[in-house]
Image (cartoon, rainbow, N blue to C red; front, top):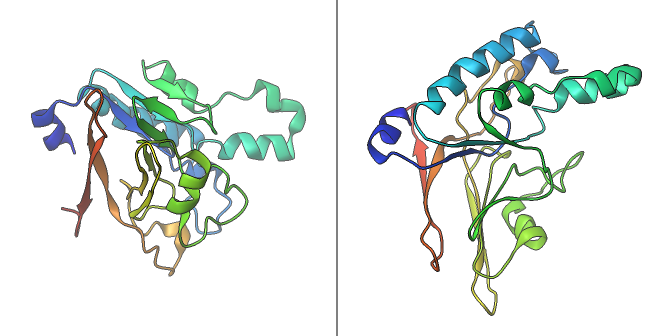
Length: 212
């Protein structure tokens, strides 16, 4: 991605949530023993590299970034109002942090979401891209989202212009230790989007195979 960005010079990088694994707040039995300070330090180091690649970085909230807050709310509710979100660190670095969980990040006719909206506590099913369109479709809109870590594409015909949704791959290790022997079935990659006024967003989903 860094090599591509050095040539393409994107005007903005939008991270569709879960920039941090936040393993320090994981309740998975195989999670590594880490502190939240270690997670944040790793995240800040990577974010600093991203900030050198584009003039604007936008970071959406995801279910991993709210892990610690949910644990505090559940176990020590009296401290919840004093809890500092991990995303505050990135806001202080100049990152535009979007915590409007159920409202898309909008750039013209492009809508970006994390991908667990409407599915929290449940499962999106085999055709989550179709369900995303049921919730967010607008004539001529293109919806991009992550969370599921595998590509999927669905088009909804609309009288004033079809709407389409893309589930994107992820930029993370595919078989983290907390999965144990289970295979994730995830895919690695990202999407490059070209926006032109009055035209549909052009989306190119770029996948890595064997780390390349």
